[in-house]
Image 1 (cartoon, rainbow, N blue to C red):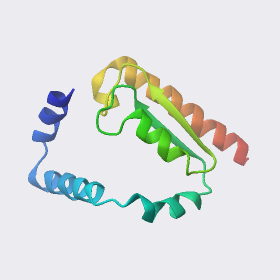
Image 2 (image 1 turned 90 degrees about the vertical axis):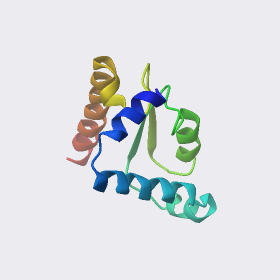
Image 3 (image 1 turned 45 degrees about the vertical axis):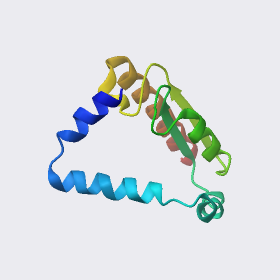
Image 4 (image 1 turned 30 degrees about the vertical axis):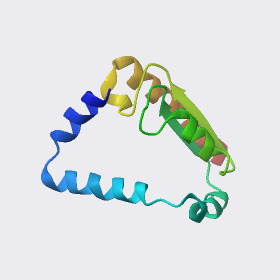
Length: 111
């Protein structure tokens, strides 16, 4: 999986690589205590979609984060890693089905 991610990132132009490095730096400097209160203030429905085999943001990491956010759902895409859409047709279709279900349910509830 890491090789696939590496090959994907190598194809980015310099500007996109710079943006990736910026976000990675943000994550590595992340102080969890600073964000917990912010997470608790989120009142919009949230859906976390995570690949079952994601080595970068593991399912356990996202489940832990979801403990601090009210009104959130957590879905794991089977047989998928970090780049769900690029990994298989099954994973992409599963993602689409979950996302459409979440969006249309929220839309119907808002009406």
